[in-house]
Amino acid sequence: MSAPAIRVSDEVQEAVRQGRPVVALESTIFTHGLPRPRNLEVALEAEESLRAQGVVPATIGVFAGRPTVGLSTEEITKLSEEDDVAKVSLRDLPVVSTLGLHGGTTVAATAFLAHRAGIKVFSTGGLGGVHHGAAQTFDESADMTTLAQTPVLVVSAGVKSILDVAATLERFETLNIPVLGFGTTKYPGFYVSDSGHEIAYSVSTPEEAAAVLTSRDALELPQAVLIANPVAEDKQLPPAELDAILARAWEQAEQAGISGNDTTPFLLDFIQRDTGGRSLEVNIAVYRGNVALGGRIAAALTR
Image (cartoon, rainbow, N blue to C red; front, side):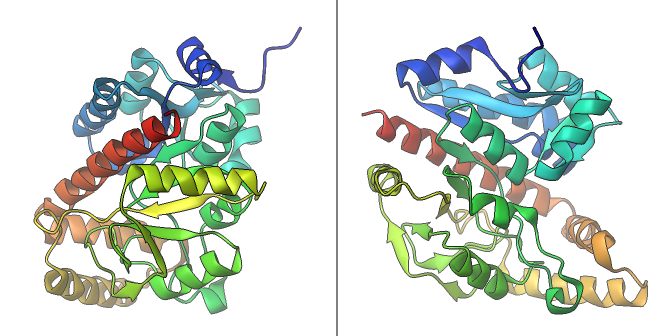
């Protein structure tokens, strides 16, 4: 008898079966998003912080070709330290599975695997969205179309300011994906608490967020619910400074002839270098806040 296509840890299976709170966590943050050894520290801290809330963490990734919901500490450590780890979106899952590769799962792949395992809440840093110039390049993240057909609740700090935020919000609307601010109707821009764009709805408590998810399930709608949780203002990058950095970054990218898939890594690296690493600390603060809120919403769902 062949092994199941998705491995779910005993701890996660039991928690889901018993109706205990569980929060899914992605793996690209520690395989591709943060430098060593900070990446492993942040990954393990996220799990520990959820356990301290009485919530079961389910870190999701691909280990030796097995999509896994509930990576062990040893597996997280291995993925954090390996150089040859694939960045795995939903389309890549069957490929890396067949080839037996290690992989860090993106929002799209993580949301899909979380839903397959029966997990309702997923905390991440930032979402993928529509890139500048997408009208010509069609460059937009698979996160959006996957979330349009994956009924989980995702806590994020919006999309990074390097993306076309207005177009991203339009796409969410077109895809029937509800976006709710947590305590705000100002859509956050990851590094900043306010991207300059308004959204229609907000929730003020974890219980309200959980109730929206329950209503979505009662209606048998297929899409995710997005909770936009802004970084604290005292931890954000000063918005005027970020605008100036982005202007310089775009100018240098154009001068260097950088385009397509190379643009995002270039811009993010530029921001990190130009801020002397302060953007990395914002990134970590964003993630901590979203993990904490995800835990509170997951707990509210079980009450």
